[in-house]
Image (spheres, helix red, strand yellow):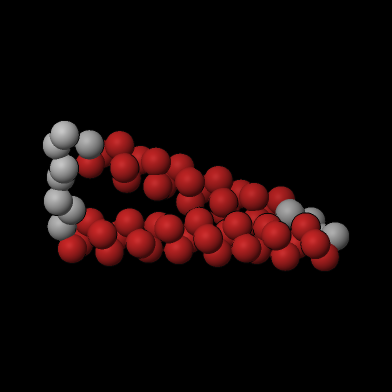
Length: 60
């Protein structure tokens, strides 16, 4: 099994993207529980997920 070491810069960027996903997800949850419009939160979540997917696909 091949294990690749990730650079500190890679791990930092990955952590930032995880943070963006978490923030957007939390915002969606808050809006949903409050019964307010979730459109913007879902758009932010989608953008963060796309960015993360592109980031990961470039690395492999």
